[in-house]
Image (tube, rainbow, N blue to C red; front, side):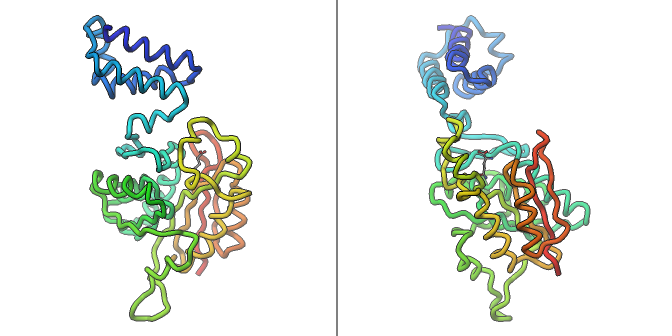
Length: 293
Ligand code: GLN
């Protein structure tokens, strides 16, 4: 089989399965496994393809045709211009989430505040924490994650990106985790940070029962936000407020229909200057608030 025939076979496998992004996915699989980019494919179309690689690439194409996420097949994905290791057990970084990172970066840039201390709750791959830390090199980040399946990805992504991010393993819904921030000297008081950022699970029960095939391969624990999808917003905005400075920023990613509900949770919870921010697709995607002093 030639390189050209192999590429066409991959593409047709995906097209026949009705995959919308068949061309893009075929290109990614081909480049990853065969090691030829599209220019080199054009130059070497009639060369014989390596048998083992061809078989491998065709296997991946079949898995992809069944709806298995491309990102898991490749084992890596780009977010905010950085590379992240991904695989089963961890939520795949979405382009929408870059809006959340932009929002936090812009907030501190406007204040010329270059070394904020930031905590990222429900960190997953660590894409938010690592991107913030690399964009603001003087910032200090803490990444909180509960899942033991996600943990190896978080550890590796911090290491491979050489980011100054500390990991705290635990459940963001459990107030005992805040004991880690108790100040030894002024007993009872919490050490306070400049920003809480989070992309928590936010799908509703209804959405969970009707997931796109690709998403069913992702961990439910990273998606399921309880019946109305708002469980994590209620708890985080209240519980973690203890470790946020007066005037500190709380920034959430939200589902595209949750803007008003989450804004209301923040206003009632004692945050001011509450804003709903849209992603590049024009959907509500981020809600921010400032802890009232
Ligand atoms: N954006 C994800 C999805 O639509 C949900 C991520 C989340 O719950 N934090 O599948």
